[in-house]
Length: 404
Image 1 (cartoon, helix red, strand yellow):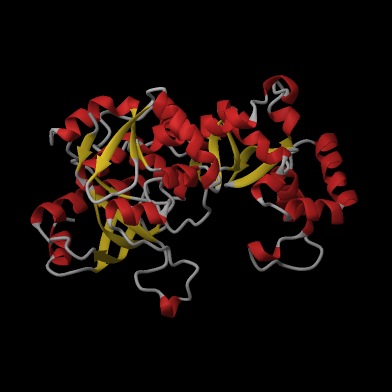
Image 2 (cartoon, rainbow, N blue to C red; image 1 turned 60 degrees about the horizontal axis):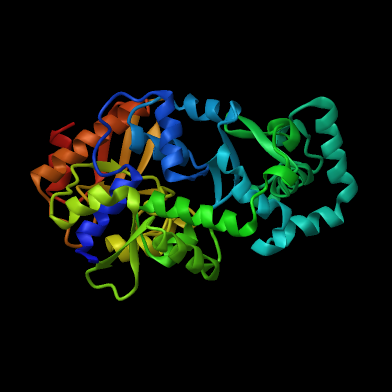
């Protein structure tokens, strides 16, 4: 019999799959960081650092306080690799074959620019390859800009474009990061055991595996959400999704108010039973990255959590509604608001510039206590233990200040 779920029960199932239902139960170890990435399948990369860069913050919200160097070490040790998945992501190395097809056939993803750049600058691009072959791994910073200082990512020097083209084509890989800068090496030196002729899965098997990973990571899914996770074309997900359902890896469910099909991954069978019996609860408060898998699909966040979210760092300041880098607030199974924060590391201050609650979110002492406790933990992990709140709804602002 098909299970019927309320919207809140559906939310709890996705939180359970994402490792966000309840706080971590023990002190984190390095193995927990890798396990969390494997659970999510993908860890999106972003460079904005007004608070901890996104991949570090996403991990913090799964495993608690940890040493950010662990993520860098996992990449350098070969447990992870970087490539274009949802966006630029850290990916478990055992899944290299799932994305290898994109490197070998950029046209299938609609990526015209890298191939065009290679054709226009083939001699210079090949010179970069030979430079790395002869001299070892290289960063973009190792090549001097010949035309003055650049003006951001839209004004990359040619060598940076050459390196990124080779990375997208799969000829170079990111061997490690230094101060978060990519260090590139030849793919055959980073993954010496890989052999396309022997190890490459068929495109159909790769799509099935990406669909399986997406379903496991999200827990509760509908077809469009699955396609978005790895940026697959919607049409190619329908068949593998139903294959997984027919094989018993997905459990069909009905969600209140939804007319479309929904499925729960079989690994959450016990949680599904608890949810249907109103026994799956969330006691978690978390300040999320804008690129957390829970919210990176803005349409999913709206449909599942009724959370209309847009990051405004690329919006001119006068037109911003909430702030430069607003972080969603998860509280006891709901997305209840967002805050604009900045970690002043030299001063040891974690500043909440503004905090906005969603319509319908009720100000209460319990909410204030939850937020204050989480802000204290988050600020301490940033090395900025003195946290302060600027603009916030009253009386929440006074409650938070009294709890500092």
